[in-house]
View 1 (cartoon, helix red, strand yellow):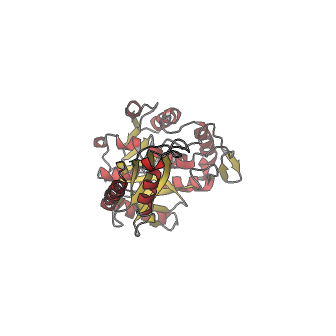
View 2 (cartoon, helix red, strand yellow):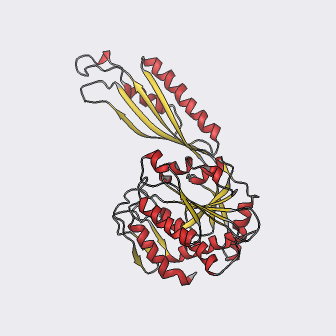
View 3 (spheres, one colour):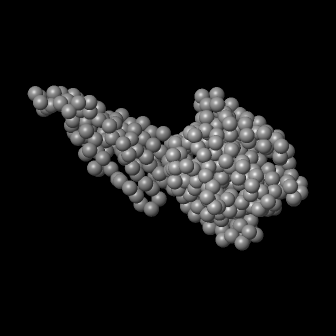
Length: 370
């Protein structure tokens, strides 16, 4: 893979220069469409842009192979988080960073380029491979928005590798949680805090009592619960009428996560009624938990490919979500591969050229597993 070092670096710097924040992935989509067509893929773009009001859709590509067996799916996402506008890539030795004012975008430029260069190496060497499907999604950082509306009747693969995890090449996640966000609104009654506070129902106090009776942090070994924001009141001389609490539940057990939502409502109603307040509760299930069997074909192929490269394959759980959560809902068995990105979602994000080349080599080996 060393022969690709310079051209990979050029592509990396070009992709970093694209301002591809969520739902603004047009330049990245155009770059990938052109590149995939040059590699002999049949490429299509769906209508996800229209659905979300963005400027690019999901990019899906297929290339036939000569090896028998079902197709293999590789996936990465095109969007980056903020601050992701005006990015530059700075190379120091083997390490790539931003200038410190923005993210680098290694999440998920690494995944994209490792897929492209791994497949390119197979083609350049004339190596046999199975049918390959590629899906580059939009809006993944917004809880897999692009993946959620893709037409999965088009995908024939039942074995997927999503390149979208921090850490060293050779690590992979086989298990990820449900993520549910919620909003709890408490409505009390306003009153002048100086003249007649006794006529008010203090929504912040009601909220505080509700929160005190709810779990915090870890709920057993498989679940986390957090209330992250509280907003209430208007002026210091008014008993606050409304308070809004927003939080998140993550759990490897989807039913447990839903049960915790019911607990919130039950506790909130009980406490609110005691003070004569009212509550409303809404939730959004962003992604659903999955667990890929360690005896699955994709895990077996991952271990086989890693060992060929003298990597020690490491399967782990993650408490982060990815497009693989969505794939699992559609019957596609997959794992999430580390692609050599570090300190993601921060201006300290970095990667190394060595990891990019190693990640591409792993993709190359996976295409040849039978």
